[in-house]
Each structure stands twice: as structure tokens, then as C-alpha cells.
Amino acid sequence: GKVLWNQASFTVTAAGLGLAVSTAFATTIAVAFAMSPRLAQASLPVVVAFRSAPVAAVAPIIMLFLGRGMGTSIAVVTIVSFFPLLVNLSRGLVAADRNAAELLHVYGASRWQQLRYVRAPYALPYLFTGLRIAGAAAILGAMLSEWITGSRGLGNLILDAGEMRETELLWAAVLTSVAIALGVFWATSAGERRVLHWRRT
Image 1 (cartoon, rainbow, N blue to C red):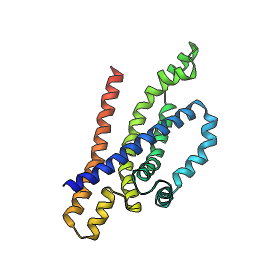
Image 2: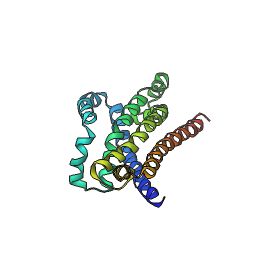
Image 3: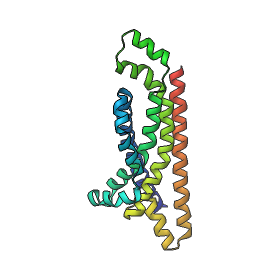
Image 4: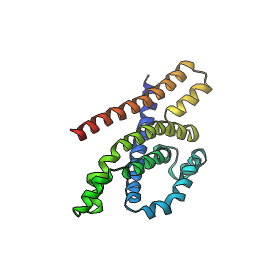
């Protein structure tokens, strides 16, 4: 039990930190794209190339620079969770009500004021959709990094338990990873209901 808890804590910490980093990056870039459509169009090939990079091939390269510890896991999680967040946020920021945006424009609101008062609130549901997808990807990304690098965590525990034919530990680790992924999904859904309810009221 203690071994399972320690390994799960490592995986969850790496996934959480990586998801936080990817959310910050995705939000910054999505806002930049919303403010400058030309920048979005020019950057599209780079984003697609970034998305197309196979994580299994990139992880060993990251490991050369960051080692086999938490840093590599965070970097891998950031990579796998970045794209769904960016796509959903970008869609959300351009899905704002045009009448509201035009009304603010008529009253002389700046682009940043339009972003704050119109675009950002409309983007919230898209953000939570991205977080639900990225949250599951973050857990898988952390475990993938552990498989490839041999780092601590549930991914490495599953491999070790399989090789040692410790069936009970193997199933416990697998079910724990599934429970964590479901927990992330439920927590994100609960956060969405609470935030959107607060926004409506």
C-alpha cells in the first residue's frame, strides 16, 4: 500500500505540474492568436509540427537534458496536454457574442477590455473541455515518461509488477491510474459547473 501510494503521488505530482505549465503556455499563446489572427495563421505550421512530434521519440531526448526524474515527466506531460488546451481555448476566444463585442467597440473599449469582458467569459466552457481532455492525457503522459525513462511512478510500477509477475500489485497500479484519470475528469466537471454557475449568477 505504501509503495503504491508513493508511486501514485509521484505520477500525480508530475501530471499536475505539467498540466499547470501547459495551461499557462496554451492560455498565453491562445490570447496572442486571438489578438493577432495573422500571428495565428503564421504560427499554424509550427503548432501542427509540435503536435505531430512522437512523444516516445522526444522523451529520451528530454531525458538527456533533464535526467530521469520529475523534470522529464513534467516536460512530457506539458507536450501531450498542450495541444487540446490550445485548440479549445483558441476556439473559445473567437466564439464570443459578436453583438456584445461590437457594443464594447462602439463604446471605445480596447482589445484587452474586449478580451477581459467578452471573450474570456465565453471561453470558459472551452477551457474546461480542454482541461478534461488534457487531464486524462496528463496522467497517460506522466506514465509514458516513466515507462520510457525508468523513473518512479505508476508507469514504472506497472512494468516492474508485470516483469515480476506480481499480479495483485499490477492490477492495483492499473486500477489506481484509472481512478486518478476519472478523478481528474470529475473534478474538472465539478469545477466547470461551479464556475459557470457563478458566472451566470
